[in-house]
Image 1 (cartoon, helix red, strand yellow):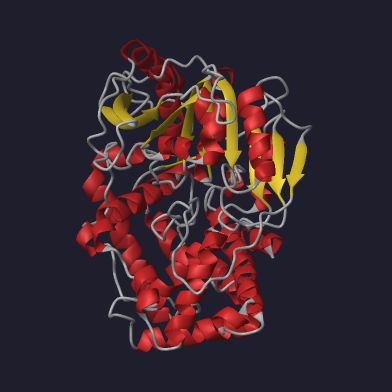
Image 2 (spheres, one colour):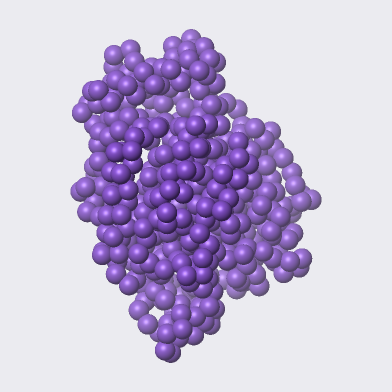
Length: 545
């Protein structure tokens, strides 16, 4: 199915020189230098200034152990002395405490910088992971560092529309949309793209994955690290790979978790099609699990029967939204989250079961828009859109989108059109696009790196991990077999965590590839608690998570 998706998109990506700007050269403006030279200037300045860490006033619920600061980076690396933007940074210093031997003091190995993906996600709370048992050995040796990338949170935030109008609900989500519905979504996509340009002006073009990679080098310098130790999850793996290509001599250790396919031809239109196909497979995994627990949920003894129960709920919600807030679109978003993390399976199945039995409250609790989160969600959506639209050429002819997504929806209806609508502003993007960088390193150019992947990950299909493994010489791929949770580092799989710790703490890696048995399946419950995993990517960040 995935191969068919790629071939159906062949020729549809408009890789025209007229539509794309340079990926790594200068802008050609008077007084400009190359972005590489500009990064060197900015990094030297950051190394001298450092980061002054203090109370996390932007995170009012943060414990005292979490300290925050800022680092200045150029908006445009071709003009490093021009406009500066401040990125917020958080840190918990290495504890030096061995969780298995209280008498042993663990020596510090440096700072571990983390990005959770998106584009549009913040890593400001990441350093608190050191309190989790799976992270304590790493937290003993490393300062855990998180940050909000450019555009996110208080880091020169982007916005494309009034957050008060961001959550539109209850709403429909047709899997085979009518022509009139398509025209409505085209109009909304055009308006959204224009809103991004109106609210951000000339700065909009500078929110790119390449600039995220350059910002990472400035952050490295500001932290006083001669070489970067970095973990990027999902989309974070992509600009981590860009960093490895641009600054191989600055790399210490790099972990790519839930790796995105970095092939320039896949960035980003084709990656979205591949993702929609993969979500169909993951949707089947979920329905098969629910069917195995018919005695708990009563939703059907086969995957097809569970699908019928889901469609029954969609039909009812279209006629009468639950709680006046949850329609088919909100239902689809709640169940899309189950495609990211299987810890969400019990709560989604229980809510669907209760709704069909006459109790809508669990479904409303899970799926209704949280209005107090509208500003954060709108900001995430704006950054996601700006980065992906700026990064590469996209088809500008609606007929291409219509053809490819109509074909795909015949075999992968669950996610296809919802994903297309989220990305359609890129067809009408008012800012010049870049050509994607060819991620690639030769033998000896880069220290050994670690790639982690779940074999059935839908948000970052496994083909992407294989492609990144081929492109980074000396990389090692560890696969969680027959599993689909999006992001496997620091989770319940001891085998995966063992490889992660051996690499970060002892510089030990297996030969090229290794595999781990899957984690246990979720335990069915009738409750609706979503579990302890971090909040997954929502429709504001549909691809990388």
